[in-house]
Image (cartoon, rainbow, N blue to C red; front, side):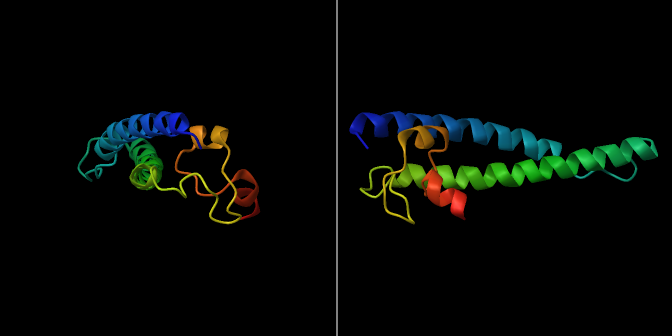
Length: 112
């Protein structure tokens, strides 16, 4: 991976981290407990609880991706960054631009 490609990836990772932090803040507001004395009808309350469950799942995934991106940012200057942990071949730059936290090439990731 060239220095220019690493710079581009670093910028992308930093932008993604900012976006995820904002998304996590919004999701945390949406996942606050629904109080039993809330004046919603029974079905509306069930719908709200279902939506809350979906938002909790999205929140968990966003936090996990944030951790992975922060880890990638810390290791971007490491010589093994962008090298597949399975086959030890370079991960394609196209994959790294889409998922900069990738630790496996497309081939190895599809075999997992």
